Image (cartoon, rainbow, N blue to C red; front, side, top):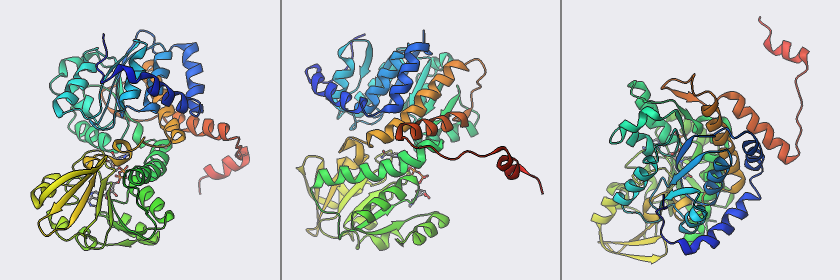
Amino acid sequence: MKSIIRNASLASAGQQKIEWVQRRMSLLNRIRTEFERDKPFRDLRLALSIHLEAKTAYLAQVLKAGGAEVAVTGCNPLSTQDDVAAALAAKGDIFVAAWRGATPEEYESHLKAVLQTKPHIILDDGGDLTKLLHGELSELAKDILGGTEETTTGVRRLKALAAQKKLRFPIFAVNDAQMKFLFDNRYGTGQSTWDGIMRTTNLSIAGKTVVVAGYGWCGRGIALRAKGLGANVIITEVNPVRAIEAVMDGFRVMELVEAAPLGEIFVTATGCKDIITEESLKIMKDGTILANSGHFDVEIRKPDLERLSVARRTIRFNVEEFEMKDGRRLYLLAEGRLVNLAAGDGHPVEIMDLSFALQALTLEYIAKHRSELQPNLYPVPPEIDHRVALLKLETLGITIDKLSPEQQAYLERAL
Ligand SMILES: NC(=O)c1ccc[n+]([C@@H]2O[C@H](COP(=O)([O-])OP(=O)(O)OC[C@H]3O[C@@H](n4cnc5c(N)ncnc54)[C@H](O)[C@@H]3O)[C@@H](O)[C@H]2O)c1
């Protein structure tokens, strides 16, 4: 099947990006060698919906090396890199349907195109494939052996589906593995959010007042890195325990509407909707920068920004200026879509190496254990989490202590 991409002539630039990451994804390289030998996905079709940039492209190639037929699309209309998509499609052995700046209709048609390959296993990021497989394309669900979900928002959607006993196939919450959220969500989003904001605005973070909405795994990382860059950080939360954690970590905590006139850069990372709305937009400072790192573009209410403004223009690539009725100008980055991917290259390579090692091994687990799995939401098997941690230590050249039998017994003793 011919890939659906923007521009095949960009392939060589995309290929260089893939080569750059490949050399640095040591866990995935190790797994690739095993997959080439064992072919765990022989005779299986895999469909991936994931931010289509160099690291994901390499993951797709590793799965292909494991014997799978692979179809790939994006999981966000702005995060696909057209040169990478072209490189992935170039050999003709992986089907790609994605381009940057897809309209909602195009985006959905790309999701449907990968599902039309009739996959046995899916890798989802945010739940869009799963949604189609439980709605419009539900007839395809009967052939799905299992799937994985990459992010918090997708897992939340799956939990709701599982609670209603409506899940049609087994699916593994990769996001909830320790080797995922502790590093990808926290340090990955922490670094790449600021990379996206800095390269897009060319502004200094030092000395600025930064407001981070949500002190979850992503928010903690974003706040920590902002502090390291010299910002004064304010946190907004709805969870009292996390709010206290933020206080103890040395941040100011207040309601968003209170922070609205103080902040100079706002970053949302809640996975919830309507965080920045008319109420706050009306009282923000002239020049305020608005960015989102949550999965969907619903955290900053764009219709409110549009309604309150008298003029708008793109002033830099990925920066839209909204002129308010009172003359203030507010700047929205990357259309309010996740700034680290829509205005950057996503998480650092070494971080995605961990996440994708988990993905690859969990997909292999599904292939191996397909006959035992039920249509449930499963945690990543702890032995996979453990193996990824050990592999990472090994590649870092770090050895750690081991419990002696006596210590083990001591820790397991009863009263
Ligand atoms: N940009 C990326 O690359 C990237 C990476 C991983 C996850 N994500 C996405 O980021 C979002 C957050 O993920 P996470 O793992 O940090 O989730 P999390 O559940 O650990 O944290 C979310 C936090 O937001 C808080 N929150 C919820 N509603 C709020 C509101 N109205 N106001 C203030 N705080 C609120 C919650 O109490 C929680 O502490 C999700 O959408 C996830 O899918 C993005």
